[in-house]
Amino acid sequence: MVLQAAAHGQGVALGNNVLAQPEMEAGRLIAPFDEMLVTKNAFYVVCHEKQADTGRIATFRDWMLAKAQKEQEELLDD
Image 1 (tube, rainbow, N blue to C red):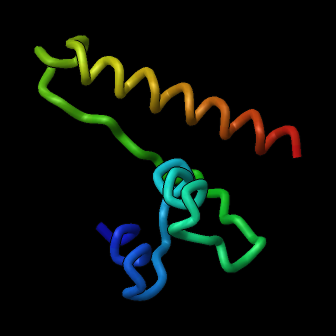
Image 2 (image 1 turned 135 degrees about the horizontal axis):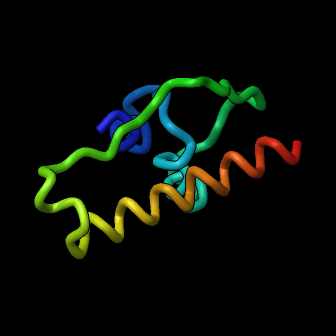
């Protein structure tokens, strides 16, 4: 929601780069600073145990893990 508010001109937002990237690529958001904060904070994809390997949840999980891996590789290359 905070990214949507910023995209609609209601202020600035602190957001995860994976979640903000589509808005930035579309030109709806910009990063006003060159600095990027790298943290050891964790994000968890959570769901009921019985749903963990079903369709959309498994697809989302796999996509998120691939994005995180790519981001990590890009940070290490810099």
